[in-house]
Length: 339
Image 1: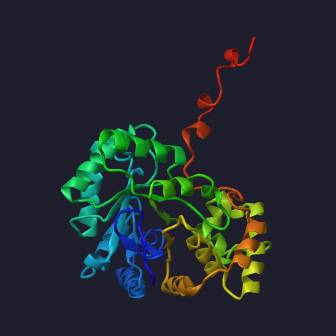
Image 2 (image 1 turned 90 degrees about the horizontal axis):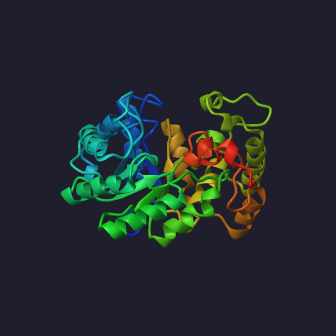
């Protein structure tokens, strides 16, 4: 497997990365199975492995699976998602970051993380507070590089500006959602990341399973998530999936291979996360490493989902506060008239 620079960190990673969310109660907690899947991925040439403290048992299972191979892995984890009910066990405060990193290091059985990412933006914490704490972790050697996930382009720019003005370590990577069904990051996030020399590691390139071929029009799906997430029942998305399935069949490849090859073909994308639950799924995804999409096929994809657009929205995506809170986008009723 080839390797690409992870932004300007000097670290090189494989275009496919192993996402470990399914190494948990979300997927499998069988240590032997996790060991086999991790070994299979590493033997295939993957060297970037990504997890998070919010993925239940994932860090512990992964830590045991990496025994003896840790030095050859670019290991990434994340913080900021809520851990339990404690209001301070979440977010980007110095108080939580310093606790969270120690917990992750202990569970992963390592003395450092190659990449430590803010799992979701924290609008309640000053970004300078977050960057200051993360800078101390980099300088102490516990973290090699820092990144974000699902951060809007405007927040990325602000964080880069704060880091420069305050002499702090800057975010070196971004982990956004990107797939054949949602290309909206092509408008701002990817160009901004490229401008600042940031690496990008894509989560859910298979759109939470919609691009596996298991969600079809008029058919009962065996994908459990369809009952949990409205996006997986979105008729507009299903229409697009049907068109993409036909295109993949015409091109002589599985839809999963088309989806992965599309994501890593973008010049602003460093790697795509594979999130297999079983060895069979992992083997199928790894087989996509040899797929190279031609211009004609990419043009056909553009006709189904035009560049910079999306079909529906993932339930798990971050929504900026102005979209969530009416008070941030509506003046009080008595102030809305010009007269």
